Length: 184
Length: 184
Image 1: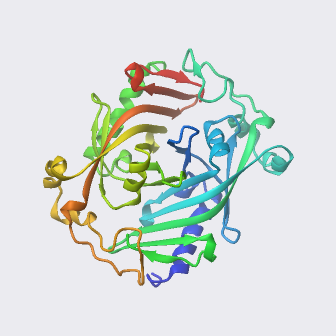
Image 2 (image 1 turned 180 degrees about the horizontal axis):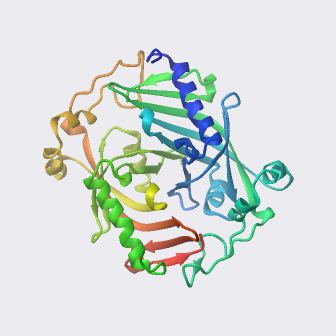
């Protein structure tokens, strides 16, 4: 066990989990809860799959269908709160990120890497969230034009470790993620 | 397996998971992610423990320290989005709720039922989120006056079942939670 008073090690541990979430579909950080603020000013959240993580740049990447309500929300308030709970480490990772919605040529390389069977996540007819007459009254064609990348620039992280004594730290891009301990 | 086209059965399944979360600390619905909107208009989320669930009334209950940022957020926008993922059922439960913050005499019965060892969750010094000089520079006395109940009146639920074919339904208090199928 590393020094519990080491802010940089605590942050590195969180990024290690996030990176593992991108690489390993069974890692707990694979599926963060992604919260946004709807155009009506109320909170929304849903599971997303983590598709990219750069500890050095402080960025995360999520893929989505462009017609979903999270994109509508992000066009209104381009900020997301990502939440991950790592059971075996008793660690809560909370990320605040500024989100840019990328489409078209800017996302061609990501689209090329998506297996054909997974591309049907982008293009559901009718649009996701539309009332339908029967439980299965929809189709899932793959629609390249509906594919979007949510490029998340991390502005803050809040980590809580539920150990024998709790540890909590906050990190901000403003000071280069130096971090400081917080009362838990 | 019940009829996949049965909206009422789908909703009942979700409430069964929520109720189990209250009764069983190892059930996945024990620890929802609780999203709010901060005074600055940006999303926040954190893990909470589910302490009450009434399928008939359509209500949920969460306990908190009154000085946490989620209470500050709820005083500004009294709406929460609760999110639960049930791994073995491949079920995502999303709840939108109007939240009332109860304190004082109104929460005496709940306080009485909290074991002494758990009461230290209410009263951390300094206030949760305050910068501290050292990782463990805080105390956790039990402080009755800091204990609050978040009484959540469910206004809407959105359920997604990731089966061989996905199923998604939306339910609203406005029509007595009759529900309707949605494109997933």
